Length: 615
Image 1: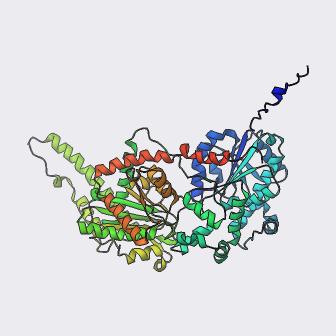
Image 2: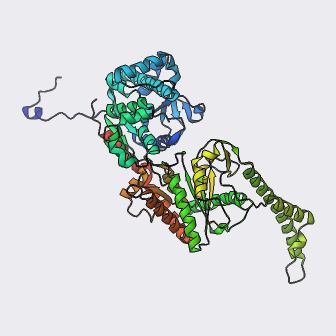
Image 3: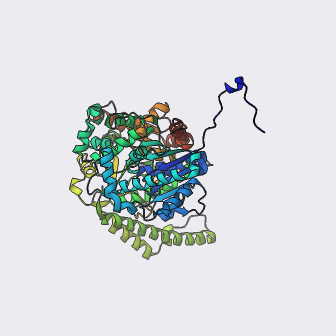
């Protein structure tokens, strides 16, 4: 039976069109490829993304990590449009892995082998130049890998568009950084049915310039991007960044700090700011993170005893552990101002006669030949002292128990009588052979270029050489801390929990995961207003110092004023009572929930909401 004709009134009512369901493809060089901070962004964000998108969410990464199988499990169900595109791509002769990424959230993942298009790499690079005026550098292995990966990503998008069911969806692709974005210009040129979001986490040119210009932020509006890119020989990479920023439908970055950089160096103001978060692990018992702090502090105590007590000792109950960490960018990461502030802190603590000691760990990555043999030997001697004292403790304990139980007198026995001469002599010999008149080591490893190392030279110039009367001691550890490290015997997150204060007063830091990881562990932290994290804290947390987040003002302060402010922030922390520090750790741990992806993923949703239902 035919439908009756609509009345004139009904025909004036617009027909309601239901929005199409959406597919989200997130492409990053760091998917199943554990390098850099973007890996943390993508991996920690996955649970929030899966909760929102479900099975219509896909991660795409390169098949370049030799241990990818530890994080990958194959899928056999190819019914979803993603799976159908994989089958089409395989039929065309391409290697594609389709499965689950074995991280929290277990998202679908596709791994594409960039090397399978290397035979055609010259054509790919020629097309980038001929079609988009992107100069491809010669003999640049990373650029070649990324260009090849971009071509496989373009092919996947082409095959997905051929899947009939995909027409029922609004398809969104979110690219992270230039390493994943080399295909954006061709996707737009071929008018493939995708809406594109591009996020830059830091501009390559900004990082290079900031490392070489002490007045980077003052000079930022006046840089000629092409001239600077030519100077640093990164024209091709910068053109990829600019093409991605201008070729996407929605452009985003991680902070207001980086947004200014994008405007001046990439020529486009970001549409959305997407702050980075973490998948914060909340403990059911408030006291548990305090117990973890105590547990791992004792392990750091063991290192400190082995490192310093060979030369002299100090009261560990009145010792605070500060740390900083990150890639070795001496000025960008704020290592320079940290050492300057530590020298001032040492002088102030001595001047005020404080009975506290600060041990500062400078943790980064620098070329080294080996661990310093003296550091290893001292650690081994400490372990031998420990084993000897345990043997004496067991022997004395057994004899003391028997003597006390069988005693008929109301007096304590002489404990010295319970220690055999052998153990007494052995302990004396170990201690005598261990003790030294030398100053404790400043650096734990033998560096490849000791005399030219900026960190070590700055430590020397500031006189932070671990003298007995110094209140501030420095340990420069030029390797990232891992559980296999014989000096510490714990992983980095455990080390962080054992410390009292993280210090990260960066000069150039688009976001800054290290201070965020610090507060997520209940450890107060120092950041700067030139980091994305610090800028976000200033704008969103008016009581940030109460919650254990200190912000050093570097944007409008001179270097020396900022160093003085940092030293005062550290001095005030040293002057806190133990109870004050415990209370502050409680507040820090509570405040960390504000940086959980449960809340910050809303900024990513804003990116996708800006896209229309068409393409």
